Length: 151
Image 1: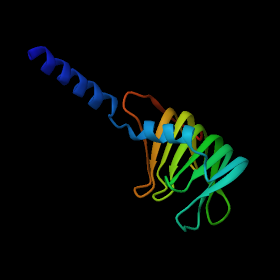
Image 2: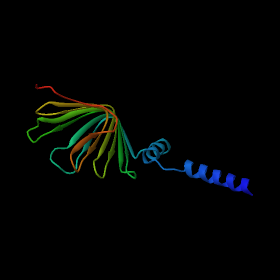
Image 3: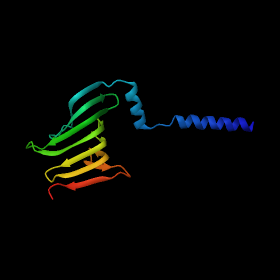
Image 4: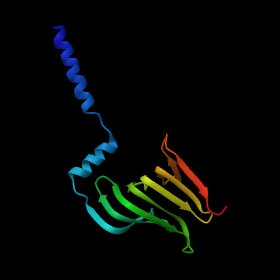
């Protein structure tokens, strides 16, 4: 009887472990099992919330999943202009996950951002952009490099 209860506990533990949820893993798995609603190659994607200064992302591959409220962009550069058509922000990345409801962006694989007119340059392996707070953050235990090209 004791051995049966131990085996039952092990089976339940194994089942609960194998069914744990990782949201990024789920999205990656979904991307491998379903087709995007829209897939673009060598295209420009506009990220905005109706503001006057949208972010233009030029990507090698852009996949839009409407039901997931996600857009995935691979090997891209981006630029944002002010009202006078001067560059405010530009950069590049290897991959991005964009939440189409909030415009929050997860950037990874060699991220580079330059903020103008001060030419503040930010580099790192991955970064997150919070659209509501207009803040870029790095992940724990990853190095972010800041430099000012004007000085």
